[in-house]
Image (cartoon, rainbow, N blue to C red; front, side):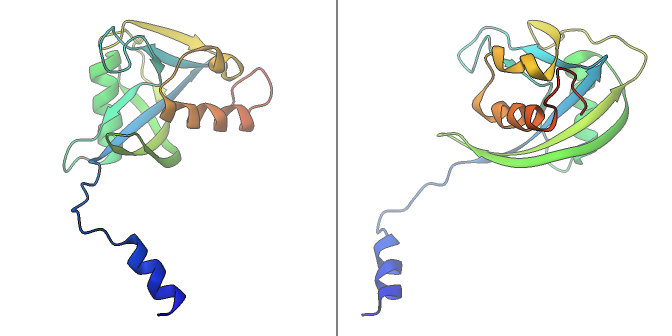
Length: 155
């Protein structure tokens, strides 16, 4: 038997494997005076009390941009003037696989309010690591701090 064939056979399993569900999520980077908006999740079993970038799950048939607009309206009570894709990545949690798209957004005239979050805070990129974020959000934080070595966040 050739080595290539034995490797293929070694991966085969007679048990059916259950693939983790996949979901699509948008994250919004909203900047004001060199600081980024972060939201603290309400207490609860699913990462309660953690900080995160505003955003949420994309609904079936929804475009990424429409999802950003809907999530900002639902979570922060704001409209979004400009949306530009900044990054995309995937992250695997034990129970699910998440595909992220990160957008840089400019807000309309309204001030953000914590409609779906416990608290909101404006934080410089350099200070984001002081907050407890879900593991997937840490990917964005690493990229922000690598791209923005100064104290100011230029997204």
